[in-house]
Structures are given as structure tokens and as C-alpha cells.
Image (cartoon, rainbow, N blue to C red; front, side):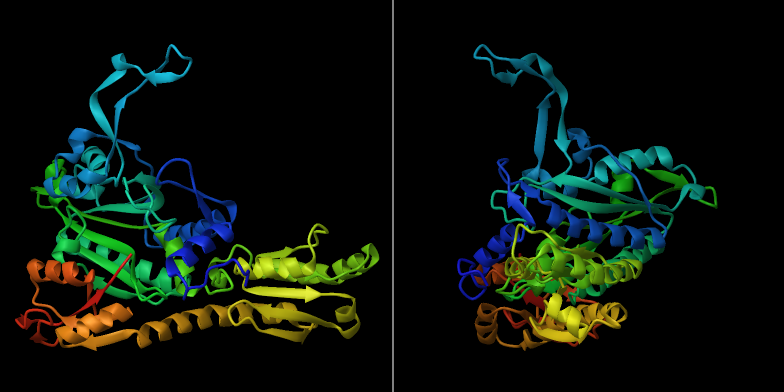
Length: 489
């Protein structure tokens, strides 16, 4: 570990920010609240994007693209929606600049827009205005569309990946003939997110339903997946919304049913963002730097030659060539770092810090012995293994690392999930961090009071759990079942 690198115990927030910057994932830009995603960070996002895109298409969805700019009047059509986003909107008022007397530029006052345009905070309004033209009959349904885009939500306090004014995401927007179809879609996409985060990011999640106060603006129900980070805080890692007929009614989107009746369409929307990058960093990384699950690592295996002369490098490179070819043929992303500008020790430290799952070192002595040094990033262990059979063994080893990271994160969550039955215990445990399973009386008033006193929120009402009645941890009033409380990002 670099001496100037902050540890998690010293300052978790600074550790996270320093790690994101030092690992070349992202940096703050000169545009307030916005970030620059650097090539290494973007390569991880591309892997996230590629896998999710595949999963969306396997479930029948197609990609489309809708305008960045939304007429202000569109946001006014759905009352809850506009109220939810009004304070976060960036507004375009003019369409032209002109040269000023001092040689700079100023906004041309004669170029004022007749109607202001909103830089999209989300796209329900522009998409449902479009769907009105696409949908006339039940034959036009369902519409299963996804958009990869950027959005703008004005933020006063920002953190790289976790909360920035502009961020990248995907937003699915679907239209259905029946309520049941829309609910099935909402739950299906929650399952897609859960499968992705657990299977590819190596992070266990809890699937649940948001409370009314935490619900997406304009939704009838919001489903979510919640993950626990190493500092004991929760991170909402994906949401899927059942929108009912709210947007169809707001934009007059009707269809003629099989029975010949005019009916409003049923809607869903769902999305994940570059916030997943923050989750990936915080769930697995350590005081030695980034730790990446093999399924999302831009470089899964790095090979570093050890040599003292050009002749030795040539010998090592010749021996390494079939290893590189074999790994690439197996679909493994491998890098051979034979740069002469940095010493092997520097390279070892760099790839360890950047979270490369496996590192192979090979030099003249290894060639004599028919071995290589193999280092795992997740355990920081090194072994000398035979060169023969190396290529065939690596896929299983990468799978083992993937499973190991998931199991380690699951163990952490299990050790930091507590059933709490008294307010006194709640106050103690919430300071320690983790998921608190506690009874809640179901009222927004109680939820808000708990939030004000402890900064903890109801992360979700868990799905797939048989509810058992009890007494609210705060008011003592009847409760239908335990919910998950936590402090969150």
C-alpha cells in the first residue's frame, strides 16, 4: 500500500475518493458537480453496459434514443413527477450567444426561447408524449424499449460516481395492455438487476419495495435492490417502477382493446446508473487499492516479464506467446506488459492497486523450472505453479475469485444484519452501521421522525419474506412486519 494512501479505518470517505482518483477511474471536472470518467473507469462501465444490454435484449427489449431536451410543459403534466424533480432541473432559456465588446461571448437577449427546455432528469415525459403517436391498438403493445443516455440532476454535494449532477445510465420504458403485464415486467426487470449485480458485480442484494415516501416520483410502486457497503451504509443499486396509468393519462395515451374499447396504457420504467461503479469500488476494495470481480475487470490477467537483457526478454516473450494466445482464445482479457519504462516491482504495485484479478510473473529462472509466479488480487497470495496446464487452469481460478468475492461480501452483510426490537438497541446499532430489521408502524410520520433522529431510512420492505406482526420499534404501535433500516448513500 502506498504510504500516502488513506485507509478505510482512517477515513472511509477519503479512502473511497482517493481510490477512485488514484486507480484512474474518474476525476472531478472544472464543470461544477460533473466528473470525467477516465479510460480505465469507462472500460469497466462498458463491461457493465455490454452485459446488461445483452440481458435486456434476451428479455425482449430494444434500444432507442430520445431527446436530451424536454419542453417544460411536459413536466407539468404529471403532478407528482414534476414535484419530485423540480428542484433538480437544469433549464435552457436561450439558443444563441453573441460576441461581447471585450471579445468574449454573452447570451443574446434576442434569442430567448418561447418555451424553456429542461435537460432531462429522466425521460418519462418525452417518451410518453412520443408513445402517444406509436400506440393506437392492442396490436401495438407491448412496447419494450430501453435507452442508454446521460441525465442531469442538479446536485449541491457531489461524490464521484455516487452522486454527480450529470451521470450515465440506462432507462427502460415499457407500455402494456394490462395491469398484470406491467407488474410482471416490473418484477422481471428487478430480477435482471439482481442477477446482474450478484452474478457479475459479486455483490449480494436484497430485493424489496420502497415505502411511499421513498417511491419514484409518479410511480404507484417502486421495487429496488439494496446492497451493503463496507462502511455499513446501504446503497440503492437499481430500481424498477410500476407507473400504473399515470403517464398514459397525463399524455392521453390510449389504445383500442380486443373488445373494441378505448383504454389507457399501463407503464413501467426501470434503471441503473454509473452509481454501480461506486458500489463496485466500495463493496470489494481494500487498503491496497481496487479489487475487481473478474467478470467486470477490463484486464482479467496481466503477464509481467522479468528480464535483465533484450535477449532474456525475447526468450520470455517466446514462452509467453502461447499462454497469451490460449487465454485470448478462451475469451479472457489478458495484457502482456513488456514496457521497459517501468520496473517489474512498479508494475506489480500498479496492477495490484488497479484491482487486476490475476498477475503472472515469469523470468529466466521460471523458464528453467517450467513455472510461473501466480498472484491473486483478492487474497494477495502468490504461488509458484507449473507453466504446463496454466492456460487450462485460469478460467476456473477466475471463477473461484468471482465466487470468493461474492461470498466475502455476503458474509459481511450477514454479520452486519441485526434484528432490533427496542428503540434503545436501534440507536446503538445504527451507529455501528449495517442493516437493521425492525418493525415499523407503516406511517410516513414515523418514518420521517426516525430519519430526523438517526439519519436512517427504510431502505425497503423485503420481498420473499413471510411477514410476522409485531410492535413498531419507535412508536410501539402494531406493525405488519419487519422492514430494513439503514443509513444510506
